[in-house]
Image 1 (cartoon, rainbow, N blue to C red):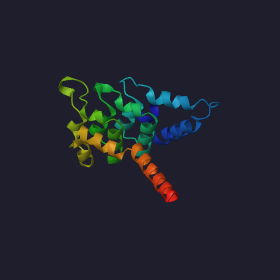
Image 2 (tube, rainbow, N blue to C red):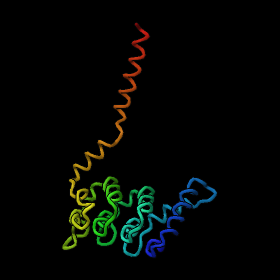
Image 3 (cartoon, one colour):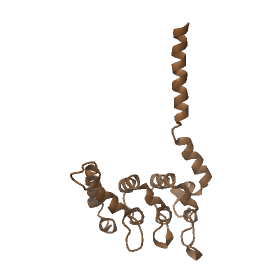
Image 4 (cartoon, helix red, strand yellow):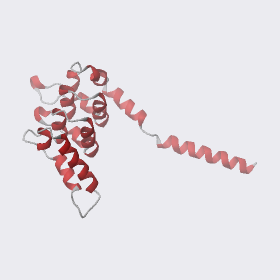
Amino acid sequence: MRSIKAKQWHHLRDLLVLATKKAGDPQQGYGNNLGSMLQALDSFDNTALHAAIGYQAPDDILFTILHTYPQATQIHGANSWLPLHVAAMYGVSANVMEALIRTFPQGLDDVGEGGIKGRSPRHFRDRFAHNQALLSRSTDEWMRIIRMDEPDDNQSNIATATADDDDQSGILF
């Protein structure tokens, strides 16, 4: 977390690269520390993803953290905010915003802390024009888009079976 809060992106990038390279080597044992590092909460209950978004980490770092620990998108930090709240409030690129939404689209409806601070990420949609359309889309629409983008195993199995049937029909005649 210190590297994030000090905005030492080169140091954090080196740590992430080193940890992911060593993750598969049981003799190194360093890969498990990456998970621990990303899951650790700071004194405000924020994960590394919350902090990296809030401190405006470069996209490659945000994507690495998101890819390595996607469950962080569902963790409430300070003010009971999800990383999506932080991204909507403080701004991220449209690519990062879309990745956050695709990872946990239900976060769009999360109001965080109750009372006056209880606002969903959509409340902040007008802060950054490049994210406005992404935050304005309904959660149901996001769910449909995500489902449409998923590979349909049944369709590929049907296509394979059809191709096999075509080959066999040539043999029979």
